[in-house]
Image (cartoon, rainbow, N blue to C red; front, side, top):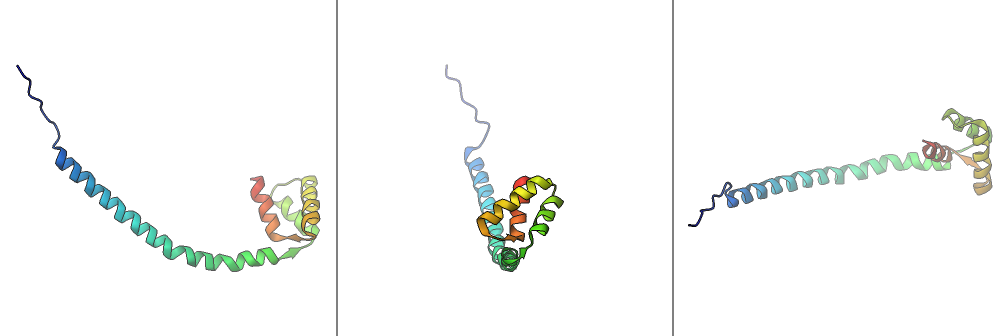
Length: 105
């Protein structure tokens, strides 16, 4: 006696359903990529002047240390950081404050 195998799923219809789901996902991803392709250049154009100003903006040693301290860095540590930047660059700038506070978080 040979037992008949009963199939619970129609393989062809399940395959087609997954193909449709895949197509829908691909369309959604393409839409998201198109949006980012439009937004990224605009954001970069808006950020670039601000970044350029931060890089150029030089500040005094006192202000540099005060800004570091405002971000929760202790005075002695802020002074060590100031010495390090002055040895490397010969000046202090706002962007360096941002870099240091980002590293400490």
